[in-house]
Image (cartoon, rainbow, N blue to C red; front, top):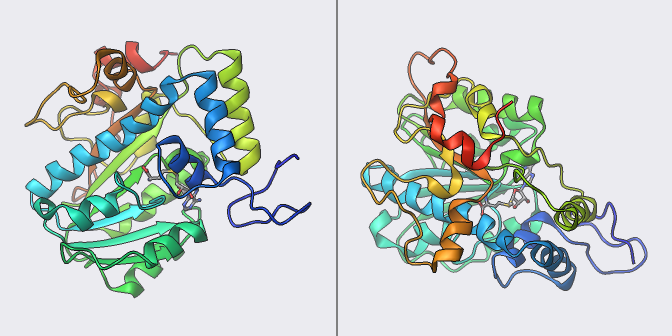
Length: 311
Ligand SMILES: C[S@@+](CC[C@H](N)C(=O)[O-])C[C@H]1O[C@@H](n2cnc3c(N)ncnc32)[C@H](O)[C@@H]1O
């Protein structure tokens, strides 16, 4: 049965089974429990086409975890997770809800998939004293999303906040992504940080992987713009990129103070797949006044070869 065009929360017009949804496919891809056979079918097609896809997804989690620990060490206690995905062992929610080292704090989760929000709302109270709220929202309407966050009154936008945008900006086209980043910058105070990871197209994409990726997009109805690392400085617009290591391949990001070889606990081929994940990551800062545009030097030259084909 074709599931073309069936989206999150929709029902198969020919029956009663829900179709695959982006959040659940990502959960299936990363060995989570909150998915159904339609999601697993999409995920397994991708992995059958290229087993490295699992590590490419894990690279985003690995980056986010390292970035959050670094920011918590720097004193951040307020988080907004946009396009948060399902809560699971590696999610930002679970990290903050279970790891006392991150200090509990305050978290608002936003996603446009009602299943994600329902799951978050039914989690047991966090052991860390984390104060958390989850709200349905579409990042293509950033003014509404931010108005809802203000109304929830969980994070204090008069104080610095870390805004997580991991593995989600590719679901927005260029105008929507630009609008979101500009609205976010308007709402947060100087000292706030944007935590971004973004998938790119692999430099060499096999026909089976291309077919499996096209199936993913058709089946979930998700928009994808796989932006190259070279586009990141422009895309980030009003956000400034001050922190070494700048914009890096997502599997190679590390905090300035820590291990520059992420994933050392993995076996070498897996580590290689994680480090070579097609995508990029960055911590960008809200400065006052907003900086002039970032330039290409924000992407260290050595990183072009690994995950980008320079125009
Ligand atoms: C690939 S998952 C990433 C989840 C999580 N950020 C992570 O890094 O594990 C993308 C998530 O973005 C959500 N999403 C996609 N488009 C969105 C939109 N326009 N507004 C809000 N959420 C969106 C999906 O429902 C899904 O949960």
